[in-house]
Length: 482
Image 1: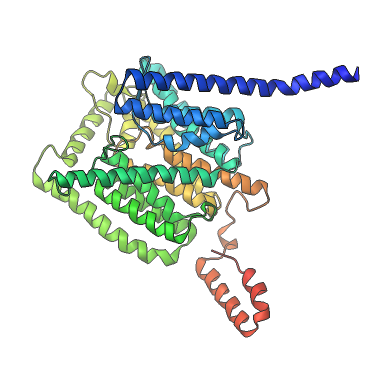
Image 2: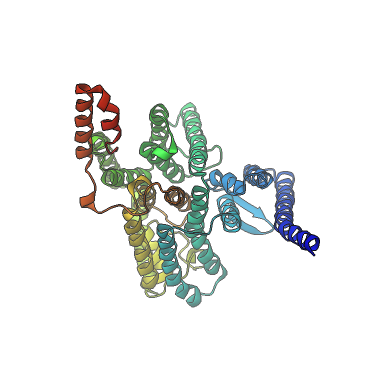
């Protein structure tokens, strides 16, 4: 009986392994088939990029034997790729496919013990999703239903992907992969700017052509996020000061070449949040010196566009679009015209260039209320998170919503990547708390030392050490750090 019981136990233990191996081989087979189809049948830039993305996911599937979340890791940089996948009549971006693959991997193989901040973020997104169910029911067309699930994936799916990687101990690696892809985007921006200069276009706004064709606002938003992440430089990222200075200069120069005003405005908002949350008084003057000229340039460029009298420039076009969206909203103010209504509406064929207007026209007042609750809740929750992790997460999210006040909001990659970053921060925090390092929520204000108080304490400790060197190590090491 004992031997039979041992055989049964071994078989039962082997079943999950066998199932995992079958699932991995299935992923590999599908990836190889799709990559071959895209390369052989559709030899275009989009197909090559899609094949490269599938190859990355294929490598992740192979590595899953030793690294359970390898697919999610390989999907992280691919989330930036906005090229379209045209396979079997489906129309989705490479970013969406990678996000879905990474999300599924975390759900199957990652930790399911969500931290309190993560649960709060998911519930807030669920409130918005519930508020938009009414427009899905009131406006029955396929794009409406598909976009309802897509919007959930862009926020909750991205949060889960990032959280799973951070919770598994891959926070630093995930962020480095994101920065590596941002480096490619910056290189493509410089290369396109050089090509424009050779063709005599001068200082025109750069629309990067490599590694894939990007709108200047898409490239600018990604590069602005890169500047923020590198400048914030959380201690768990392990980025040296030399690399920080280099990458801030590279990403910042590329951002200026795109001339994306929305991205610059978002970056300023994120840096402002960083100063407040960290109490970085020493950086306030430096950032002010950068912010004042940037704001003046933004305002001046808008004034020049209005003064030019050109009715077809971006400033006049946005005013016309906003008037049209407002007139359209008044026709269905409660539930709106449906998500992605511009695909089917007889005369409104453009996506509104402002976040709240888009939600109001798509989901009505009900959806707009859910949108406001969701974003206010995001800010409140991340503000309460301990600054070591919450400052970067909040800054990334604020960067996106600030930029969306002047541009499109529900766009693949531009929405998902900031929430992947936020998820990574919350996952890394959950791992640290599980090891007894820190806590989820920031202590009350009266229990925290200001940055000036911490610096004064450090100076007193150093002075004591100079008077009595034997006490230096003990006194200075006990001083709270910034």
